[in-house]
Image (cartoon, rainbow, N blue to C red):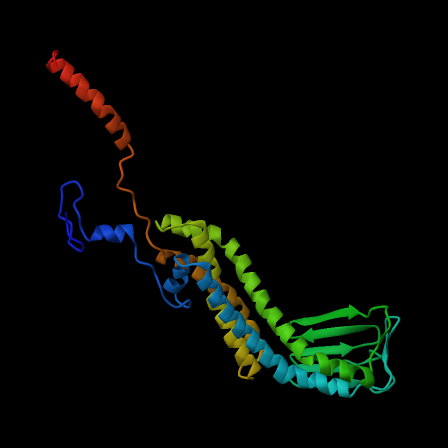
Length: 305
């Protein structure tokens, strides 16, 4: 009996070598999710690691949105609510504004709120995001263009007495809810793009002789968008800190998409190679035919055996 830890002897049938363990248990790829091998490593690990990294990226995107809304948007809304008139609102789809004046109500370079009840003024682009309250509609504008929405026919009253306590009690929850919704939307889009990216990643893995299991490729194609999420969080943080203009943030949008597809097509090359089977598919047939041949040969050589 061979003692524990003793190396088995070489035999003609097995021909034991150290490389046999490498074939049976291939080395798992590991690394950070910002590199091609790091993205490919998610194919060899479970869903928990992928969800953990997604949660980190979602938290980073949510944090950058919170900084933008809390530092630049919330003060404008606070000032606008404090300057509301004593009486006003939307009645039968029309804006009722007691003051005859029109123009910017509150704003900065990130958000601008403009009151124009007569609709006879052209203010131009004063901020990155601009909201204009006109006589029968409200307009949202940015560098990408303008969108106009009609008022609801229901009566809606807004004044300082009503809106100040309403906004003050819901302000933190609205900011957190909007930021978390944006982060979760990114996570949902990544999962959806992961299902879409299974076919191209499977094609790359097939032609490069790499392992191409469905679950492994789904994790890889989902993780391929983690670098894009990090890029979104970084540029969003730079924009919130006023280190990057809105135009620079918008220019980065095509780069987000291209980065994800680049990782999706290159990362499968870092998957473990498929191990060809050394088993002979005709072994069973040979084993079944061997006894028959032996009986035939023994019968032919010695009829009395």
